[in-house]
Amino acid sequence: MTISTSLSKIATRLTLGSILAASLTLMSVSAFAQPLVDSLKALQLRNDKMYRTLNAMDDKGASYQFTNVTAWHIVDPDLFDLIKRVYVDQYGQKQLKDFDIQDVYLFAAPGQGENFEPFHVLFMGKRVKTDTAGGSELDPFFGNTKRKNTNEKIPIAFKGRDVVRLMHRQPALLEQINAVQGEIVELPGDILPSGVQLIKSSAQRYIYHQMFDGFYSKRQIIDEQNRALGLPTLDESFGTADTTAALIAGATSPDVIPRDPEASAALPDEQLAARAFKYGKTVDLSIDHLLVNVSRNTAVELQLGNPEVGLPFWSSGQGRLWLVLKNQIGTESNFKLGFDFPANLGRDDAAIFKARKLSGFFGGSIDAYFAGIDFFSAFNMPLALNFTILPAGGYNSSIIYNGGPAITKAADGSDYLVKNGRTFYRTAMIGQVFIPIIVQLDPANFIQFSAGVGIHTVYRSWIPDSSDVSFRANGGHPIDQSLVDKVQDLDRPSTPVTPHVGLEYVNHRSSKFGLNLYYDHLFTFGGWIELIEDHLRIETSYTAPLVRDAKPYEPAYFFQITPRIYF
Image 1 (cartoon, one colour):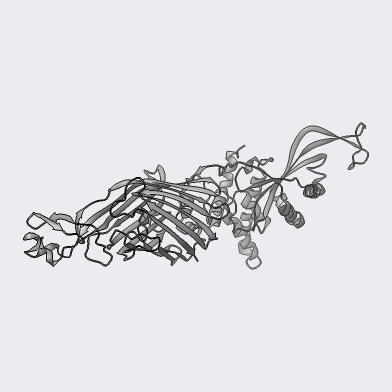
Image 2 (spheres, rainbow, N blue to C red):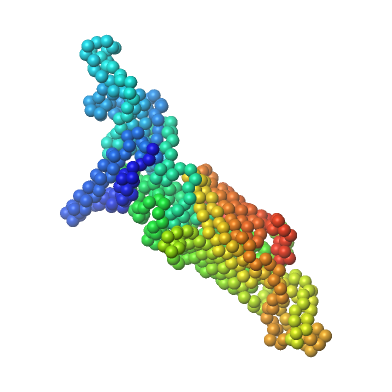
């Protein structure tokens, strides 16, 4: 069963903005009645149109084949009798006249808190014929007349305005429905299909990406799923019957432009920012980084290490100070500008951390994520990139002389022996370009698969000093005077290019947790679990080359565990 094309088009044109505006207008109408008469009439016409759309929904609920509408089969006898009595009292001489109710179904949308708002009541039963000639049992409702059941079971449905307003006039019934509920009837997805889904909307992809990039709120993801269905977000209230009808009939949040869930139309920056950063925290702190949001769209981050190539804070000799620009460089993007500096950590083994073998230098980095880039205006896809350049400089305190002896060239072209204890390893460049694709397995399970290429260039280097230009150096074959106190690269022990592959999984059905696997020169396995919702998680990772021996600048393995705190 599917929703008709025409009905889908009607639903996607409806916006919640007008309904909320109407609510605010009604609150102040006593003070500004005359100027608002025309607006109120227009809003009333729009609201009536939404009710007509809702009334056009399929009687048996086929139009509600999307995730956030709950269908209950009422099996509790007391609740069944209560619903039946209320509706027979109201409609016993109209729609329910001569009708034998045998089953009751309710369709409800999420309301405030854990409550639901019923908006469609379906009675399944049989028509009874009045027989004045005798031949059947006396009818208890119609005195001496007789009733005969037909064999065909048919539906009678009440939808939209009638249901919403009746429920609000019968608070005891509404309370009983929420307390007892019923047996859930599965309705497979249609507007937002159930099962495995590729996230195609760039705006939705931009927000979902936060699940794999640090802190996120489960409420935020549920809000996005609701918006895609045209249903209310968790913060939107069902305070009035008119608002309820608007939400059910296909309205979206006031900061959303209605669209096909599979389309990639960009949102205005302010609207996207209001959605994407609504639940953000001010501070994000762990053992290897500190991020402070100075505004909704801007943050400052201190990071240690190069985890993008499997070199955590203790292993790379590098630190970074990032300026984070959210949705400011391009649309639906995160763009980071970084200043790299040497970090004199990890010179020796400490606890579970193995001593590093790389030396740090000054440089610069960029890191960017674009949720949707149009190629030739025909193909929309996400793109992520990361580049770090560390030019050869001079001496700094992070240098570890662990490179062993080496041969270079003297000023006259002869071989020059660089003795043991004078060489070191340094990262010159890191580059990554990859495509991260997000797939929703079900409303609470997600994976992100990334594929691309990775570059990590490492040199063995040394820094000549005044002794290397002495006429006695190297048996009378010194190096060139201009090279003194400047880093000189001797050879490149690294593998320049490898595939970049990432697989990340997030589950927030109950407590949030995630698992991940990356390969970019080194393998990294990781996981995390949230212990205090939206405030504390524990993260672990294990890095190793696995399928080959470690290179001279790599750790044989590295295990890290850290708390991560948000506030």
